[in-house]
Length: 61
Image 1 (tube, rainbow, N blue to C red):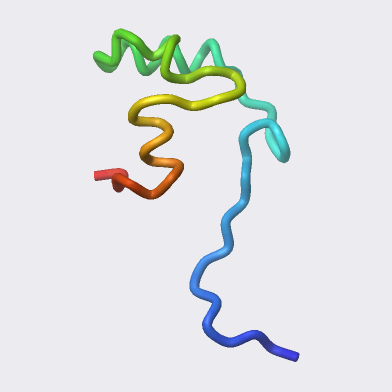
Image 2 (spheres, helix red, strand yellow):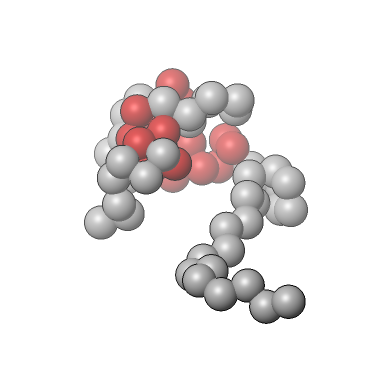
């Protein structure tokens, strides 16, 4: 049976499929001007802009 209407498939790469280095991500966000990246990019619960993006409240633009 072929399912019709599927537009997107989403993969959670946050430590499930790939090992991501959180410290490197935080360092790079800080270098881009996000001074509170350490607080917002929590290892277990996202906050602020990261949570808004995850929930679809904002776009990548």
